[in-house]
Image 1: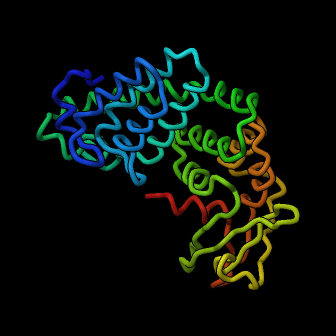
Image 2: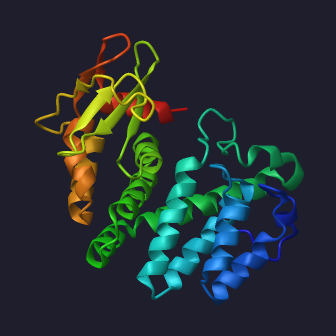
Length: 278
């Protein structure tokens, strides 16, 4: 991985320009994993407005090392979820001649293809190491009683490590489970999916129920058997981590409805996850 003393850090970018301050923050976090330092590193330097940067890829191996060395499951979980978020937002490398993601492409001429490749390989290795914590993190979150929103982020990280960006996008965007917004594959119009107050079953609306509370709803036909592999895994994960709301919603997310705008048949999960495909 890129040495913390390397001048290359000043050539890499972050949300505000040069990433020259990132090594110092990593060193501080290595000494003590404290809230203000990790928030500055994660959300001011490595991740901003749903974007990761070249410095993010270079920093992740160090975060994985902190997780590996820490005796605290809470620290491991925090790094596991954070790096899962980074992996969800990372661009794909397919279609590029050198197989590097978009975050590193602009730096090939300046720091060299070899250095960029090493950064990316170290990142992928660290992500693979962090993915190995999945079962421990699921078990820990269930044991300590994290709330459903936190549990959903943990599941989102787990599926991001699997490369399921559509599933990770749905769980990250709608982490409370109090609404989902899909897009009809036939007409492109938004489909608003809200749970009922009485039994938390999901219903479909043409317009946002916040602004049109009196509109009629359309039922979703829930799936009796979960045959979609992603949803089957999500169902098992939600059971293992005891994310009760996701458990209730899975049959509806696997179900079908009629588009409120064009009346075409819509598979809910396909319409949701398609919004996160590049």
